[in-house]
Length: 322
Image (cartoon, rainbow, N blue to C red):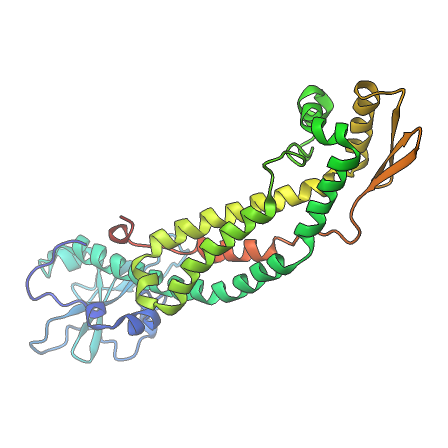
């Protein structure tokens, strides 16, 4: 924040955080304010900036009138002196008052930024509760159990496909051209449920602090924002992995996988045939079928998108970002 001269008063400095959240510091139509006069009010009170306006580039044709020399302008400040207001163009503020008007602007902009920070911190706290509800719904859903059961079934009965799916994804140009080919579906370390629970636990720790301690949320807003953004990406990666089970049963993928299995497994003992959301393996002892789990549904990402939207408007001062 720019150093100011001794005795210079700032309207926003007299406001509490709660008052600042609700304060209007920028005005689009300064002439609509009450108690606006066209001359400098009498009295010994120190005038201070109450509002800032800048309508340059707005298309407005009619300019405002500065109390000093009645110069025309579109950018300036509404000054307050006692119970009266008057308008000063940005140049006259510096030349007439002998003030560094850039310092006024910097301090004013910092106050606006802080007000917006407080507002967004309030908004983000309001967005946390519904996200926590959605997060718990996913945790309690059957999607992880169905995902694990499908993987176990593939491991026990379709071992060649289970062990070589990644090989197919790398060996065939058609697979590499598919943006959705399930690269890690059957990888041993692939555990979406564990990843989800870890991310959910970390999210809850930050959320509890933000909800219970308003002062903490405001002071740690930069850290909170970065942490939430990182966790949202982790949630999305989990959903991407759950989505791989759906894409595995897409016709193009099934056809390609069965082609490789028929060529590289043991064609004399096993024959693979793609079906509708299924693979049939024919062998001497009969046949086995692997199907998409019934009612399998990857959770909707709307909650993530809405929470990210709330985060995207979350601003913070440089002094808070360290």
